[in-house]
Image: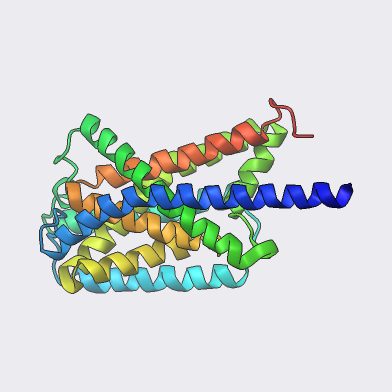
Length: 283
């Protein structure tokens, strides 16, 4: 009887797995249609991203990209040994803030308006929020696909990002200081600072001197790499590509900032609801 029950359970799991794959295949139609149309427009030279940069921006961009790339490689090599702390999170925010602030000063000193360079006034905030939400919903199936492929490849070796483990542990213990620290970093600081660096400046400079495809691939790969997690790398790469295409479609960096903020906030909320000590643990 146990053998029959196990066989029946296995068949159910196979059917559920196939149903999920069919649903995912159906959902993939929307991102490919939406982002494929934008990509074709970018290929025809119809992108909207402003590129007011000059030759002075190229060596600075190459220097920063090279430094971040080396840092990402070093972090990946010691992924098993890394430990996330509140102090480390704060240090990352400070470092990225200094870099972003330095870039802003560098641009302003050359009479390049940061507001115009990032297209921040091109789309009204309400419309930017609606566009960001819509484009993010279209991107989710791609991110899910990337994660599923990596889970299948890594198997038991799959490991979540350290910051997610840190947040889960803080939520399960009800540590309000750590919970709000991660929320402030992931939902506010990271979307603003990372989008200014990766989409606003790095992508803009690479687009100016190498074209949109070179800029998109380099910046998306670097964006995924700096998060230092093998499991999340394909999903984050595809998400970064979607951020870039949404930026190209609207010409406003505010849209990918909003997409980034909603994505991070949603992830943390779901983690909190599943990990918080306010909720009963699963049996």
